[in-house]
Length: 191
Image (cartoon, rainbow, N blue to C red; front, side, top):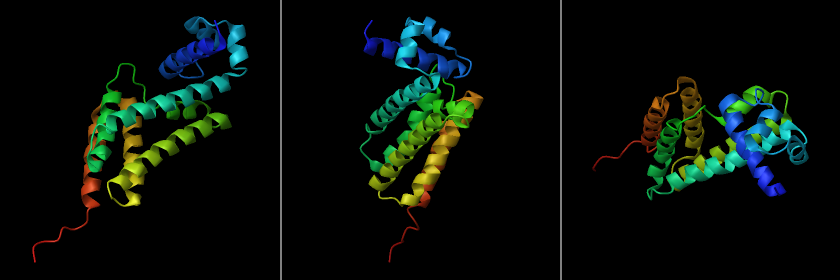
């Protein structure tokens, strides 16, 4: 098996196991068994488990943001695109095996002791916030709206992971709609 194939198989196994069970409960032997990649090759590819965790989070970030953008961009109306973020969250929360935010989960396990993991989590959250900022700008809304929209999405994700329901997405979507309506300002009546 060439290095690229071994790396992908290792990352596939890491993503499945780390997300389902947590990083610290998964050993390299578990990854060997799930990936079919020998321990020797795993350690050649990822000399430290921390490197594998960072690579898993990086790859998951690209996939997660691509899926979100593909869903959002199906809508033409810029304001509808903002609301579509919460529609997509609801779909994600309903997926089999949903366990909350992979980055928050990894940060909770390793963030205090692993600067590379904490940096990857920060990069993911920054990219998501920047995406919301761009959606807000495209809708002609105040830039200050991005932070509360971001917090609504983050809070919904954490809550959905804990409660194992999709309800937090619907609640966040409704709050986002209210924020959008409030950001329009008072409507002028007829003269």
